[in-house]
Amino acid sequence: MAGIGIKLSKIFGKETITTNLIGFGYSTMVTVAPMFVIIGNILLMSYFLRFDVTGYQGRNLFAATILYIFIFSLLAASPYNAVISRYLSDVIYDETYDDILPCYYTGLFVTILTACVMGIPFCFWEYFVGKVALYYVFTGYCGYIALVLVFYSMLYLSICKDYSKISIFFFTGMLVAFLLAMLLVKGFDVEVSYGMLLSLTIGFAVTAIMEMATIRRYFQRNNNSYKKVLGYFKRYWKLIVINLCYTLGLYVHNFVFWNTKLRMVVADSFVMAPTYDVATCIAMFTNISATVIFIARIEMYFHDRYKAYSEAVTGGRWMDVQNTKNRMFRQLATELMNLVRLQFIISVVIFLLMLIFLPRFGFAGLVLQIYPSLAAGYFILFVMYSEIILLYYYNDLDGAVATAFLFCLLTFLVSLVARNLPAIWYGLGVIIGSLTGFVIAYLRLRWVEKHLDEHIFCRGTLFPTKYAAKPSALVFDRKKLQESSGVDEKTLS
Image (cartoon, rainbow, N blue to C red; front, side, top):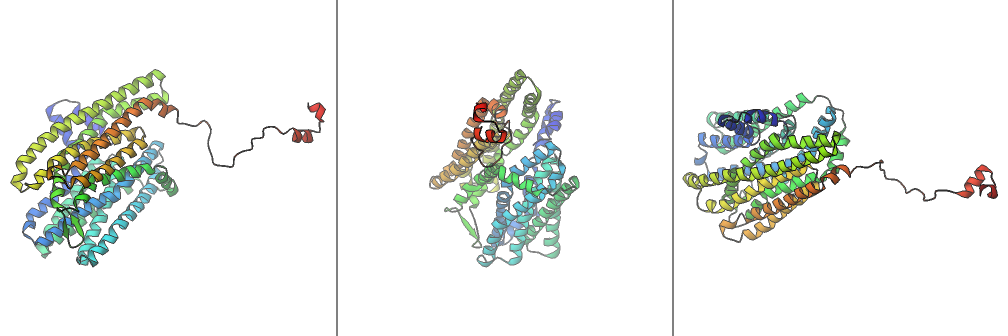
């Protein structure tokens, strides 16, 4: 997140309606714009290529493929991001920039290996059991790997504070995808669903190539210290657990409802629940602004208080340490409350607009019955994730692990119960899981506030430690001293 605070402070500092709108737009562009660019491109291609009048089977296969590409690329790329981010932060702090390329290649290898382990068996199933054409299976797999590369490389550009370039690369890639889809379908008479899939795959690849080229341009020297990177994966394994549980918790309730009466099976391979998935997507969009608000306010206000406290710890008086700590936690509480207030207002407005306009676009009936509970659940979920980020600030990995794990577990278990309830309660798993995670994270933040001095000043070691055989308990050997010095017993006494 670091890097946009100065820009936002300059924009919001003028305190006018226009600059506030510009600031919110800038925050949106550098945080969630890439996702909207992809979705907007798919909608534009569908409109201009008359996707709605193509074959039913082709439409379902394309929709299922895109859904699986997005979900499982996130599941493959997300678990390692926090460890890599921690390593990069330490490298930048130490100014040992030659360590960045080894981190990039090591993380890339681990991420791609994970993606292949997840994707290749499914592709075999899709081809041999689902009887999907080999070229279609291969194109979908390439799109999946390309999107994994995109998500992975985004982390490094974020560390480099190139948020605007991320949006530009996504826009360029999707522009290439749109123009290519027009050419393939209109010029070469390629089947619409496959033309769109192939174009999106190439668009993702273009985005990934531009990201990787930018990273190689920034970091050109490699000291080949790959063992050091692997040590971070071993040392900070809790970060992997946190990201995996959180990302899995985002979709585990969908997996539950994929095995209910709402399920639809495409090509004997893809299982989904379109009604529940659409309601989930709309609920997520209803509350996505929480990410923008949190990043903007943390960068503008809390980060400065946190920096002041860190500087007081390294070179200030005890009074300065206590004063900056109190101001930091007051600001933390203020930002959490402001996030809840602002997001609640935004979510209520968007919720009412959705109820009014969704039926006009064909989203009614069961979708609108499921939507309210999911919207409430995602409101709590995004606030909970903000607390996890704050726990990262204080290196409270145990608290973050407990939060993410219980969130994922309860979301799964309660969703198993909720699937037997009326449709309006289908989102109960997300609500209970997110609320539990929110409470756990809040209690851990309070615990950190009370024990921060102990955490900062009492966790170091005065002497280096090492693993070796236990030394002898013998301190003084009288006989050996007598033999070596030649002094008799009486004189020694």
